[in-house]
Amino acid sequence: MMGVRVESKEIFFLFTLVSLLVIPYFHNQLIVGIFVNAVLFLSVSYFGLSRALLLGMFPSVVAYMSGLLCVAYGIPFIILGNSILCVVFFICRSLGTVSYLLAAIAKFLILFFVSSVVFSSVTLGVTMGALQLVTAIAGGWLASIINKKILF
Image (cartoon, rainbow, N blue to C red):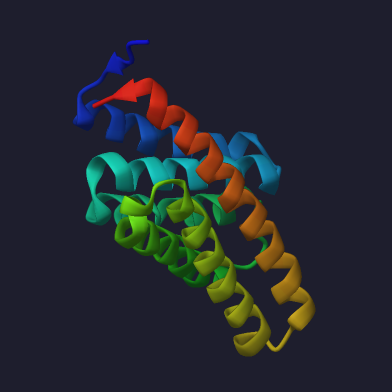
């Protein structure tokens, strides 16, 4: 089966635009998280680490501005989690589908640590971390399906 050929600049713009537009309209962390993580994985795959890191800064700011993220002081930590996801996936991408899982676990661990230690709340760490783990794994699954359908 043949995929669709798309120019990388066009698709990066589309990823950026859609990630900025999806968050305000879906006030559901599960849906938004899966989508954002899929976009981050795809960005690393097709545009490299630096563009993916740049893109990873937008979702938490937009989530805060749209009311999905309740506290502004969480923004840098979510950006850190997105960055860890991108870096680990970039480093491990030669491992295939395992790289998605490793990146998701790394994101979970950093957000669990931040929530538990920095904010002194193990409950917040488990809750926030578990949700991030689920959305990162599901986002990786979605990205792997999209990777098989699109050629760049």
